[in-house]
Every structure is written in C-alpha cells, then in structure tokens.
Length: 143
Image (cartoon, rainbow, N blue to C red; front, side):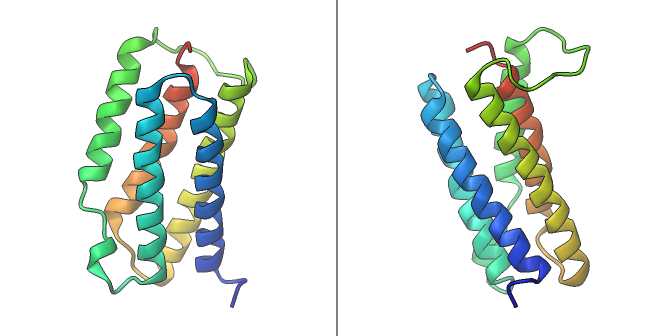
C-alpha cells in the first residue's frame, strides 16, 4: 500500500510542510512567517483531503488560492522585473525556499497523477500551482 501514488503524494506534502517549517524559522519578517503558517495549515487540510476524499470539509473553496494570489501580487510589487533565470544559493534562506518550491512542484505532479485515478478537489490543484509561484517570488525578496 505504501508504494501507491496517494502515499507518495501524502509523503511529499508532509516533506513540503517540514521544509516550510525550516523556511519559517529562517525568515526575518513576522508577516511572512505568519503567512507560511497559514500555508502549513492549508497543507494539513490538503493531506486530510487526500486521505479522505469523500469528506467535503477538507475541500479547498478557492479562497485559499486567492490569498496566495494576493500575496504573490504584493511580493511582485516589492521586486524589480525579473528578466533572467534565477540561480538558487544567494543565501541560506533563499536556498531553503527554492528547495520547498521544488518539493511543491513534485507534490503538484503527484497530485495530478492521483487525480487521474481518483478525482480530487481542483481548487487544491490550483493552490499547489500558485504555491510554487509564491515561493519563487518569496525567494526573490531582498530580506
């Protein structure tokens, strides 16, 4: 059983949550830390959804993704236009954020694969997509 795509997805979401915890303790900005905690709670909700797809209580409503989009817009306003590739490693915190971003992308791929076998909440799929974008812009923040 532990070799199924669903278990791989749950393990990847758990791994992502742990990486975000590390990022959270490294960030200097209290507001960013608080928002990462919101994300961590949402990931726990997502894990509950994957574990019990019949329970509508764990479905994402779309509000979660809208919050991410608002945060992305706020980060973009703080940054110059990005016109080239970004190489991870300018500092420790930024490197940890990029690791979390790549784990998010893996979770998104597993989510899509599980969704092909068992339909999952589409709002959650969009959330994972936007989460990787949020983490990219957070990594570019000059803190």
